[in-house]
Length: 104
Image (cartoon, rainbow, N blue to C red; front, side, top):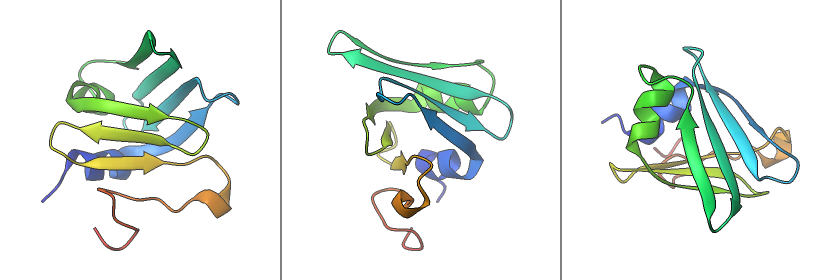
């Protein structure tokens, strides 16, 4: 079964976050992207670059996100989740649906 988390992982090409982890962007193979901002309890949002795209589809299905120095974690309406980590290769222990790589 393909979950939204697996779609996000398969289509994601790059993840970039500001040094203070208040803003991030997740880029997809079709050229679309999701922008994230979380600067306070009153300012938390995610926005797709275009509506009819991977970013648009995943943005509409996004239930919650967590953005911090550890990762960007996305929670979807189908109950799946996925994490994206920064560029440090030692920190790239990607997980989908809460399972370690290879255990999906």
